[in-house]
Length: 422
Image (cartoon, rainbow, N blue to C red; front, side, top):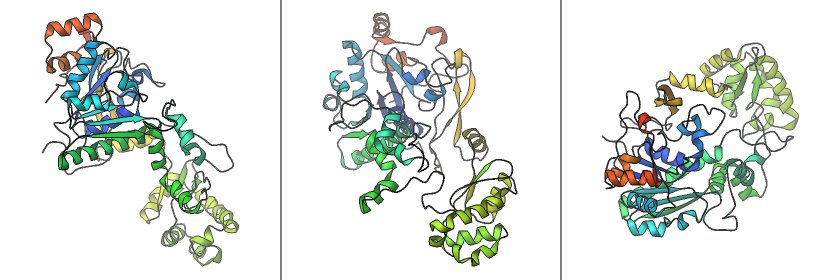
């Protein structure tokens, strides 16, 4: 059985992270993704602290494995016509320019729908296609500020703090992929195309549902809790262990507290009226005494020992790990979360890996084979499939309408270039 989106084509005009992460998910589920880039290429190709990858930075690989790169100048008449031909043969158009840019290029939804009425068109922007903030520039850290994420993060007695990775971009892309797939299902069941207007701010509020809903119901803000869990329980917090590592507990239910006390060899805590139930344990007068008792116990053994023994006893807990440790564990657990790809820093073959979709199918599930594309790597093959003859393609390259990867570096070592299907 093919992958769920096999046979579907995405014309991806997006760049940086939110849009490409959307099409990344669609590619992992089998869609063919044609990444339309300018001659300069997506800014993510040389983004972040690891720039020695010569246009294939880790930040770019993270959201572009298995895609094809078509590099054209959309501001030229010929480049615009190439885009229209591609759109007419596509199922999905994805873009994350500022509102109005695609209209100026003649590639807005109404223009594209005239080319293919059943098209799914997804426009991602900072604050939506209408409203008072429509034209405001937005990147991840700005929307973290304007959406409430920064004000909700960290300890109550500290200034607001940014989540240390592009959480808004990543979640916006994930939500956009869900929206596109819902629209594709809607089209298959009932016919017709769809226009999707997805704002980073809106996606962030969805991500903050656990904080937004209590405010909407009560009119009150939940306090920031730092490394203490959402429940505010003193047994849903992080504790230092003997070897300097930290252990996070998630003990919020009475049965889990009983399991914890027995596993720690302190069953008498169950009879202490201060700790008899979750409400008593969360009382301001009882929080610190319980935390001090637990802190002294956890300092007696190494974190990995506590994690192993408490987990075996049914106590919710986990060692605080860095992302490198997590990736190393994930490589070996057989769940297919980390997949190999081929990257080519400085033109040389080099093994690399990327993160898969995060869920498993019994068969024909998510995954992609290959690498992130070099800029213009598939310009020739895509233009040929769109009906352009070799002399036209050469003229486009010569006149600057299109850009291709230099001939000497056009093939990967040991790999065939992906073919444009459909």
